Amino acid sequence: MLAAPSPGFRQLVSERRLSGERLALPCLAVLHVESGRMQLRHSRGTVEAQAGEFALVPGDLVFDVTVQPGARGVRLDQLMVDDGMHQRAQGLISALSSPVARRMLPEITIVGQSPHLRAAWRCLVLGAHSGLHAWLIEQYGLAVLLQLAIDGVELPSPPDRDLSLRDQVATLVLSDPFRFQTAEQIASRLGMSSQTLRRRLAEGGQRFRSILEDARMNRALELVTGTDQPFGRIAAEVGYHCASRFSARFRQRFGVTPRLLRRSGQTRLA
Image (cartoon, rainbow, N blue to C red):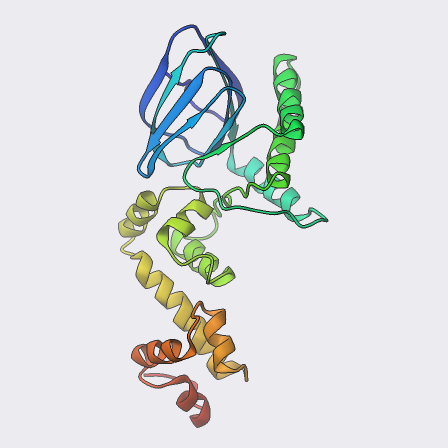
């Protein structure tokens, strides 16, 4: 079975098959298959990582794992990315001077080894086995995360402990309304499964669809009453391709169309 997770680096070595069921890691994990073949099963399907490949597993995702031995048995490296390290990595990634081609990280992503990623990971492994100070090990781990971003993999956002989950969802919706429209997209960005997102919202008496609509319409109301932006632009800013559909939804929500509201100069709605 996989070793009990803790922030930092560890290596799992076995001559036999390893397996675990109903695992849920507390934070983002980067797994590297040095030898063997790893199969990960979760709510959206099954993925496999061959020797030399990486698996990026968001925290709080429930999954089963099986690792079949290869010619050298099972050799599986594990980097646990705690919240602090995750935040520092995102800061470094956002500071990249050149644009990086990105793809969203779904619930589990399998990533091949680029030469630079292989070099960054080898530095991490050598540093861990040399007994370097934990701070130095973290720097090697940050280099791995940065190289993943350069290679085109977008990490999920680290959790913001100062914001409620509802506010995190609303903030993401407004940050890019066309990109973040479904529970799956939001959950992936927050590093959890869509089932976990819905469950945690339900525990607080919230529904994803309600948060989505509240965020969009409240922002639209601010733009209609507080700016002179064209309604088509406002519609696009809150995630509607069609201005007429936006107007109908706005009227359904507030009892008046955006045009009539702006024309009347009304700033308060009953």
